[in-house]
Image (tube, rainbow, N blue to C red; front, side, top):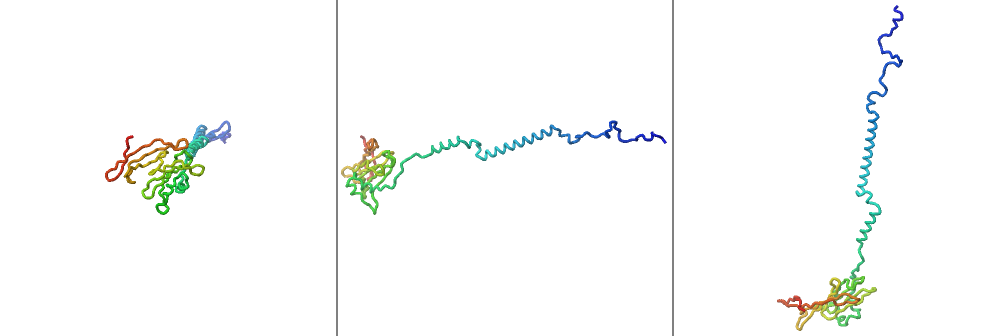
Length: 247
């Protein structure tokens, strides 16, 4: 027997004098320690930055969908500018053309029209009369004035020209010219009356000249502004062309 020497421990794990047993790898070692606290924090910050960028892009897309101007498309400033444009484009009051005036009835019921003109005012064909009617602003009223020319049926010679002004729902005769041949018309707000001049032997179709008189509404009546006399020269073939006379 070898005695106690036979109980000597043989080869094996190293003995730990502290009693903790075989040595081990410290807790937390290995691949899990490769991220570390700094790497985790950086990853979170990158994710947060990506979320902020996505939110900004979403806001930008929503702004473009409303017209691309964002808050400038709303608010009192925009409303005021639209109101200003609407006021600038709103039409101003103006006289309307009354195309329903019965010119024949108007002349026949007018005590200022001579009996000779009323006698000549008759239908030429069926119920058609040789009457020309024009509408326009001559007297500065709120409605269009009416210019009526009465002519003969055969050769359309003007025998009477009249201007009627709308007042209080009726028409008042404010001008008349009954020296044939005569014709009145509206020219840029003025009343222009043309009176043809015949010399002895002139046919109705070929007067020797004409007097053109321009009237303007002044102080409640038509006042003569100026007049022009034109003499015609008969061309070969019987055609007449106006030639200004020397005054």
